Length: 358
Ligand code: GTQ
Ligand code: FE2
Picture (tube, rainbow, N blue to C red):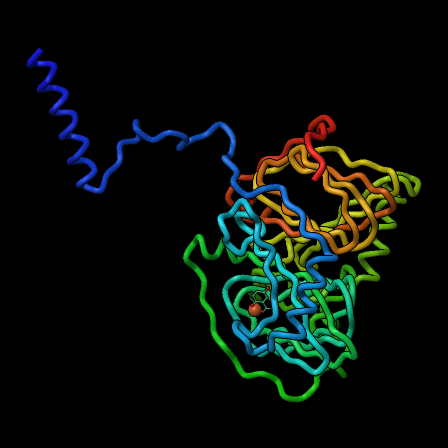
């Protein structure tokens, strides 16, 4: 009995000393290596109707210089304890700029993409190259590139922002700097240098073998008319008629790689009444319904979407789309990171059952 007691005491004092030594025994950790990822971000939808109204109130009430120099409402996933993140790895937001306003120059290590939802008259300066933004365009501001947004328009412009900010934050790799803001309009330069040099399919400047390519696409903008036409051709050529669905990936024209080392951008079109296969992948994504009406199911939760609605898809959550009318989505994901680290997994499954209507 005394042997037993002294042993228990020895074990107890051992655990105290381990804790005092700032150590933790692996054998007391529960859930450290779960069989599938323990997800806390939720399948979630933000309605454009509500978001748009709040963005417009911000545009009336809050000046651009009112903090952060960007008028941005971040999609905050309710599963992430109040953090301003749409998913574990992705920042997603809506930004609004009034006519005559400028969001001043700055740069940061987190990389950003913009997908234009409404309005006209905005030009974004990316490392000095003026990119005019129109609805449906994808605009890149890669890591550490200077950027500023200016509006010469006659009404507000609203666009979707996607950033790798939560990833950069988790890696303690966020750096930021303010810059010199342009004072003359560059909206007259309607074709950016990046488009002039990299905008022709299959043709890129031959800069010689010694040229070290940047780790991002040198083309800063992907225009909607090209995306729209390509989606239609993809459906027609691949399925032989107009009743299918198509996924396209925005690519660096010099390498075919993703547009940014940390973010994949895709566009998806689903024809009326077509349902895509259910699939899931490790890593998260955010989906914006650009145009149409569709039901998406995320981990058994069904969301009926209208144009502009945005949905968070957590890691390993089964996902599919059923179009009510022909629908086009823009999406961002962290796929390039998972693939580079050899952590990517995908699985196509039977059509998932609907557990709940959101
Ligand atoms: O437009 O520069 O949504 O710096 C978040 C951070 C947008 C921007 C965001 C930013 C920006
Ligand atoms: Fe920025």
